[in-house]
Length: 369
Image (tube, rainbow, N blue to C red; front, top):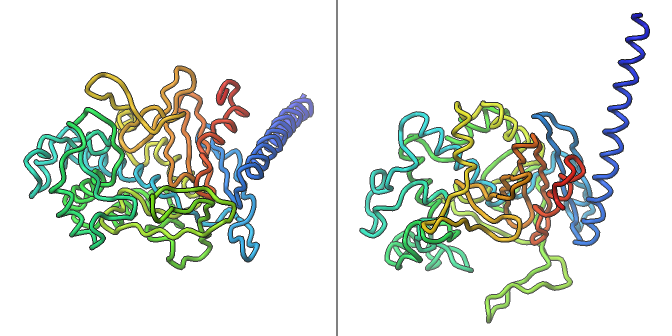
């Protein structure tokens, strides 16, 4: 009898292993085709199901001139994915009773224009504040540094009434950084490191700029260039290396570098209650924010709504939250399917969220169709 049970266990285990290997071959085959079509030099893919890593793969080239391959410890620029760390930081402070996301920002910061005072923290997080943008196509407005840009943006008119429109801009997260640093009594990077990265044992994550020299960090590439006259971005045939600088007073907005496996640790930590004490707080940061007229708005395409630092896919079947950064890095969490897929690439403009949604269909039939 015991031998029969052992044989059944072996057969069952072997069947699961074979199924997993077949799935891996299918997924990697699809991803390689997408890399060829979109001319993506290199990427990392991590698949998580029920808070367990099912697949972690590194493909392609990290540094094109030297043909250095991507490894699982290669560090990628993930740009605006940084906002999810900010979102959790705000909720951590709310759990500490330091603030409430429905508070008016005038309760927490001084020296703001009169017509900004009714804007709430939630409206900053969801980009529905209507504030003017502290950045333009060239970087910080005025081109004279962060403090100068802050003085200038306060003199600009509102883009819309609070709650009227979704206007994605950096001013919102500039203010959020000020609020977080006020109540954490430290700088933003130290607060996030202590209360998030250290908690989930993320060892290879840092805030900085693309030109910083960091072990295992790969460059970011693009086929686009900016026309000097029109300011428009035009796609060409030549691959170029990009250089990005992320202002230190807007680390809440962008400027994070890490690996897909490290990002996976953070996601598992969030969903297992290590970062926020209450499940309803996770639900809050994932809930799409309605505009004053009762509709949703977002980046378009799959991402048809926006929550509190989290782009949202609001479809009836397989809804999801889908942070993305720089048009090259993204992850999608499908809460009802207990599935998360992370895809970091080193090529701007490849719509990684669309690739992820197709990969999800290999694990949950019906997604991505």
